[in-house]
Image 1: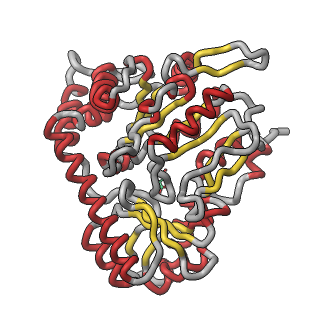
Image 2 (image 1 turned 90 degrees about the vertical axis):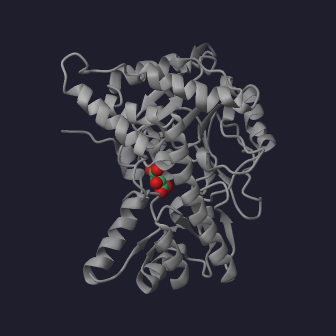
Length: 394
Ligand code: MLT
């Protein structure tokens, strides 16, 4: 008789964004003429930057010719992309990395989920609350029940407190999904110091770093002294350059980053992650990596800046529009997400109200955890016109 992974029975019935899609589908099939404005899942609406499109066309042509055709690429990614990441995303911020500390992948969602493969089952995990559900669900799937929540709320200024329990793995996502808030350098340093002292590991999700506008907000955790020993960082091109449907991201695992066996013997997590990727992953497609590389050209980077500024302007429209209507809002300054305090306590009820009465799709805060109750998340990823219209409808 086939045995199931019983950990799956401990998960909620469906994934947050699947449930939202189900409710939207049910509503639109009964109301086919409803003019729905999507501000739910963080999916982008602007096309890919022109530089990426041109690079992809060129790469497609290379694939059509025997001399330039590419089969399997290096599992860890092509050096042409690693070099750009090393020089433009990190060296410019005073962080020195080598190519073999950068692993190109097909999405920060996959990597933040897959990273659990290299972690022992006995770890106690700390996550913020509210939290991107992937961190929790993937640990539950792997049989880890010891999950500690660090509330991120209006009351603590959206700065998580260190857990009281002794934890060995901490997930931090800043700029934060879902609240859109950030940590300053000294606030992030508290976590790095904790990890150094406790030989713990920080899994730092920086998928939204390109939206940072304020000074003193770290773009990379490696801007904090000592972080290379205790942190793995995830980056994504999804929101930065419109790659949600194209799929490219990367993960940084410094050579110094260390994990321990039960006898306290130290091992390099860089080696473990490399071993994991070589076994289970055959690399991001060549064409896609060429598209990502184009982001680092002068044209590419100015096109990306234009896209980011467009979404940041939408975020401003949302923040100001809602504030004018008397709502309390957070985020949206260094992030494409706006966190709105709902007039009624039940965020799923408010989600349904906005869907049915205003035809606006949002994400209920409760879907991100207990401390998300009483909030909804809006994204700035729709068009400017639709964003303005949504504010008028509200
Ligand atoms: C979100 O809406 O939270 C994100 O789009 C989800 C993701 O990146 O997987």
